[in-house]
Amino acid sequence: MAKDPKAKLQIIASTKVQQILIALLFISMSFLGFSSGQGTGSQISKELSNMFGGDSELFQYIISALELACGLFLGAQFFVKAIPAKFVKLSLTVILVFWVVLIVILDILTVDFGGFDGSGWFVWIEQIVLHLIVLASILQIQN
Image 1: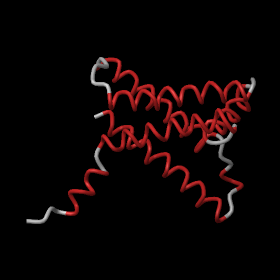
Image 2 (image 1 turned 180 degrees about the vertical axis):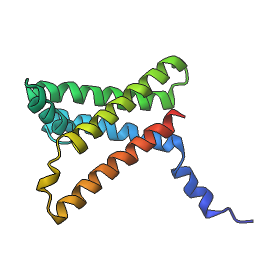
Image 3 (image 1 turned 120 degrees about the vertical axis):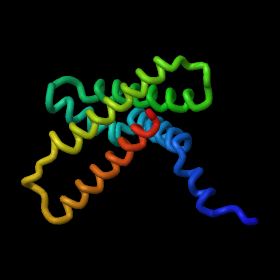
Image 4 (image 1 turned 90 degrees about the horizontal axis):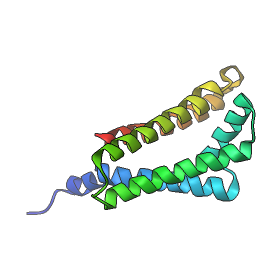
């Protein structure tokens, strides 16, 4: 009897694989922020600097460090079973709050909706949908 090909694909959609992918996303975002000053962390730091004043570079390093900590924690939690459950819940809540703040700042507060042309709307929709997909994955990891 042959195995169902859908069963093999379900492994890719598992929460464990999602957790590894989200961990890699956060780690790569942090490396990008530390090394080149580009990426999502850089966008957030620029917007925070514009909103509240302050050094954009300092915000960038703080956000990159937070992204790295989130990614390393998600990876460690996957491989190390001795992490206390309360710490896991708190850390996942911090990751969730960080991502919601990212969505609010980058996709809602700092967007000039009046200045969009036809393709600008599609770029914004693509960005917010990608951010919401990551948010949904973070929520699934928490359960």
